[in-house]
Image (cartoon, rainbow, N blue to C red; front, side, top):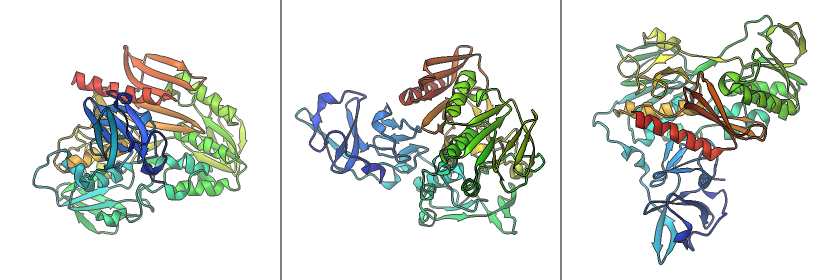
Length: 515
């Protein structure tokens, strides 16, 4: 079902509603025929667009309106109320706009509005001279978002995307969530239909290995010797899982999770597995644990931490997440490490031994920066970029898990491994490769799903001196603020969707005021 036809709840807006029912800043979800429509007022202006987010179908009426935009409560996508354009990832597909009329004290939504396909292209003026050839190295979130944004910006030059993966870009967050749990079919995974790349003139090359980049000559050399020239280049090589280095880690029932191929291998192993061990209590590790438990497999989690995800979420929320998973049957072995794998026997530092016919290592990732280093680009725990995501080499940009950018809120360079951040950086890099000067200042955001429990996180807090809890963590209704010197750095939430959006907006406003 499409996002615009997911339901017909609420009033029939073609028949009209009283103008008094829609105050300034108000939103109402209704329908016109079989189409779900969101009606909104901003001052004297009235808007109507599709009512559900084109990402996962989130109900926009339950989100947050900011000026003439609306933000999705689920994963913080943002849409223009004027044009329906998807302004911010993780949504890429625009929503339908409708003609709105007000007469005799009533508001009516009429026919669908014709909006130019190039609404995004008209957003910002660009120089007349555009690059003829853009090469994107990578096949993940940032790479796809950049290619999509280039075409949405009416860029008519050549786009070559070089991906080391064997499949087109997929919705990677789903690999550790619904798809791994068996509740989402594989056809949901591609970020775009199979014909998207050919229809948009994007030369997507799979299983493509880049041997080196020559910034001086503006050339990319592939492993097979082919040389590609570029005018602008985006490095979006992402990160790779850290592999176990303990004895026995090379056995076929030991896995990591990064690609669709990795996920397929784990699913195949789960068909006959009775007892699985997940190494690492990170977000990915615990999402894998939840997915395997959903499949009815006994799951043990081994990690060196005292509380799961304590370094990101603090001890209070970490302790709750542990108890929540324990209620589902997950057995924790914390403050411990795996030291060897002998067949289906996993030996721990504590001396304990765990039986395991399926092992998934989620012990972290490292940025793929070898190509950048070989090209002489500045690196420092990632590829160093400026506020516009440009490297120290002319015409080379970097985005996603490898990019270390000057965060305006922490006044230092940061690198994060969040899916939505990567997508938004890909969009910004695309705009800047076309000659715009768009600083990347988006507030980092990610979401995590554990069974039916969602956790949203906005901001970036490496360390803090205060954790302020609003609501009740145990009741699964809370907002957790991470502060340093009284200033909020980040906010985590459970079932506080609008509050999470407001926290994101406040962090944006704080930066705008300080700037």
